[in-house]
Image (cartoon, rainbow, N blue to C red; front, side, top):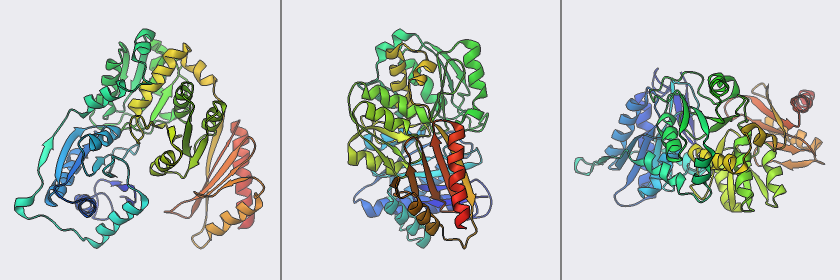
Length: 460
């Protein structure tokens, strides 16, 4: 059993002893801590939005969360089965004081989690998350008297609201998508994407759809992380039924993977790159992704005359940098698209609307569109350390060795070479250093990573 307490939320496996997994008592404890944090932050009668993905444990966890918030005297708007971005949008539309999304994102079905939002429908900052964890540790909850208990409002309209919201975005070209007469395949891994994505495609006048795993029953038919090795079924369906494009989402629909018309992978790193290319071709602006994302976004941005910035890893850090640089698009290389014209959260519905617009206007096949972009390959590695080794000292030594290169140390250590980069990040939970390298071929990326690993071993 596993329970992970972090500033971004509480994630764990269902079952086991208290404190070993995400037990009912743990759910109540951390829901109450979050509710207490909301009460410290705001005055008067408070409101929190709760939405969930389709996990088997979702109904049980939802009841515990809602009951805990009611017990604190907080009113709850229960939007039921909903995507993460739908819940984020609902927070601001309801003028709520926060939100909780019940989803363990791409983790397997035995996992669930409480993802915590502030009054802007955005993930908590590091300081706010730490405060929630402190309240939970101290158990400094103050529950309401019986006449002051919170009330619950059921509202299942927000998926339709979200779909219409996407259609209303200026850069979503509904007419071009309709005229393109696309055949679109989707894999929604039997979670809430199975509700939202077909509704979006229908609203976009996509009349030909191939639906895989759209029943929101929480029985994931394959590993729910949208990586190439898990997408064999949709690739086969695309080739067999002559689809123009395939879309795959994770269980809470904030990551978007694209599959080409020939069954090959567009590449999660390139979801954001393609959407940014479309937007920048109409309006020059700035972009942001995290330090572990592909350099292709920076290349595309600079080709249009915009400025690219890298943030520390984590959606909250990407959002903060986007606001600082007034970026028109940003996100993460895992298929997460953040479009401020919509809201500051990763949103696969927005990503699909913008990508289909791009594909329709371009007149290209999906694979031809992908071929437009700079080709990079990422190699992901890690090196095991013993607990007594000073990882900070190792990173400092590597930084000094490569001091003549472009260095970024806001999140671990990233070294930019002329046509490649390598990033070293120490784990917060185990004695390892993660080593990501990117170059123009898989072999070059692997070689760069191995060179850095050799440097570390020499230091040891």
